[in-house]
Length: 363
Length: 178
Image 1 (cartoon, chains in turn red, cyan):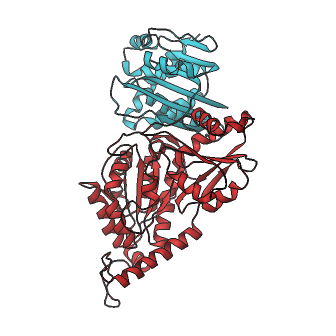
Image 2 (image 1 turned 120 degrees about the vertical axis):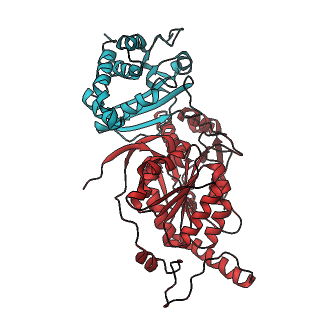
Image 3 (image 1 turned 180 degrees about the vertical axis):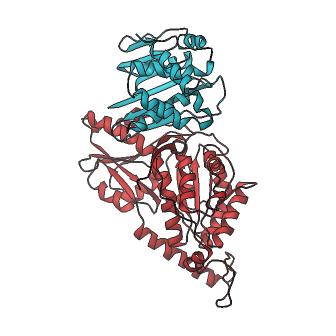
């Protein structure tokens, strides 16, 4: 059966996709610009259909620790928030990473720092990709740029989280959270049974039968030699993820003289800038990292050999640009353009910034 | 076909829902659509606007600096968006909320007395549908049948009895443009 094309907000798409994925539990606390995730789940009442738990916790800290506990039991569990709320969750996220547990965390970013503004931002790039909590860990970070990807990355995020036993994050922003466009929701599937969880997650706390030793999920290890071995195991997992899971999209890069690197909503605004630039004879291409961790260093490195310069466009003061510079290893000029604190540049502003940074491109 | 539209006015005038019904109508027609609201600490009387893009090919940026068509319902919005209309584009405005008329000479301007028409209907809530009717007359981007389908999708079922009233409002709006 062909799935119906629907029109909805990115936040709503996440909620619907979660129910259809067979998520066991959502724990969250409202905050703009992502409150529609919790609101949509409450309105859909999935506890009456799939049995999914939807709980408005007393705080973001409580919500992430509920996720920690649910994940330890092998359940598919998630939380969502926006920037200040995600900061509160960082301790719990570090524990989930250390516990080698699958979970999905959604951050629909707003302008900061502090309580900031409710308008769109991409200023949590460092927090998401470099480890917002303590210790040597990584999240798999997916950056959606369409409402369709908001839905699809719920599935992808959970699949990767369970495959590698590591938390995944959807790093969205207020634009893709609040805008409506067409979406085809993933097919609905039932939640996994307890037997399936016990079989697929032999590490999970599922109630010990007489036939196996107790499963223990803990992040405390006072034996430093063992703690180093634990860390080495985490790093091996991250290395495999870096080998296998890099995702990105190219736009008009074949004949490009210059490159824009942008992620999420900003990449779409830049696409329009590129279309306008090409009408003026300036050949710019775009690479859009889809996984911000693992970052597409190699793809950017390869393209950097063919272009004269790179503009990194972000809704922040310059965060992803550090990874782009690492990728190109000083081969060519890498400049930055960003607006701060919730202001979103329009396609014309991006093009003007490009022309200012690369005055020779017009000649 | 590509139509880049800004609809702007006061919060509470139904600007966002008008955009939503237009977007749904286009969806029914098989077009690509994007609906991007200004969002903020919304309140009745504050300003609200929504960018709606309809296209037969995939849409890149949901955020625009220029528009084919602007539907303007208050002075602040006219001040903000008059210069953002593309040359040759269309401006529809209601003088009820606008005391300094637009100055552009390189665009098509439709002055519509939509608030007055709404008073005639004795139903203030129909205002945005009157405006939508005028927009569809000026720029027939989606057929009426799709708009009705769009209304059915956006309105909860308990309000479906209001669809004929909305249809009447749209028809009245269409009559505002010769």
